[in-house]
Length: 260
Image 1 (cartoon, rainbow, N blue to C red):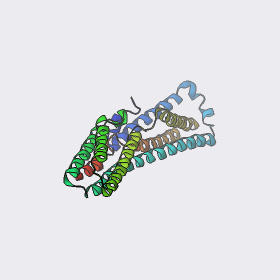
Image 2 (image 1 turned 30 degrees about the vertical axis):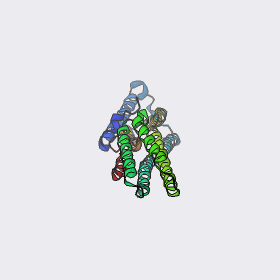
Image 3 (image 1 turned 60 degrees about the vertical axis):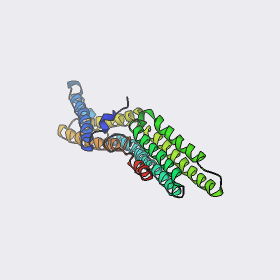
Image 4 (image 1 turned 90 degrees about the horizontal axis):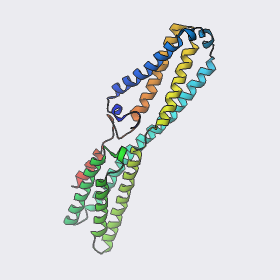
C-alpha cells in the first residue's frame, strides 16, 4: 500500500486541503498540550530562550526540502503530460503517412491503431501499480507486424514503411516513458523527511514561545497553516495519472478515433 493512499487523491482539492490541515492541526495541538504538562511548564522559561537562529535553521531546512520536492513533482507532472501528447502526436504523424496508402491496407492499420487506443484506455487505471497492460503491448506488436509485413516492393513503399516505423518507435518510447512516470511518485522516505522536518519546526516554534501562551497559539497556528499549504501543493501534483486531477488518455483516444 502506498502512502498516502490513492483514495486521498480522488478527493476534490478543497477536501484534500482540509484533510491535510486537520492532520497538521492535530499534531500542532498535541505539541501545545504536551508543552503544558506540569513538568514541562516549569521549564517554559528555559524553552522560550530557544534562539531565533535555531528556529530559522529549522524553517530553512523544511523550506528547502519542500522546494526540491515540489520541483521534482512539477517536473514529473509536466513530463507525464508531454508523454501523453507525444503518443498522440506519433499516431497523428502516422495518419499523415497512411493517407497515401491503398484503402485495404490503410483500413487494416487504422483498425489496429484503434485497438491500441482502446488497450491504452484499459491499462490506464492500473499502470501506476501493475505497469503496462498486456493488451496494449500486444496491440503495439500487432501494429509493428502490420507495418513490417504489409508493404510490397518498391522504393516509395520502402520510404513509407521506414517513416511509419520511425513514428512507431516514437510511440513506443513515449508509452514506456509514460509507464515509468506513472510509477514515479513521492516515496515513503521522502514523506518521512518532510513531515519530520515539519514536526521539528512546529516543536521549535511552540517551545520558543512557551512563556507566552497567546503568542504561542498564534505562531503555531500560522506555522501549521504554512506547512499544510506546502504539503497540499505536493499532493496536488504528485501521481499525475491518479485522482481528481489525473491526466486522461483522451488525447490518444482522439488520435486513434481519427484513424478509425
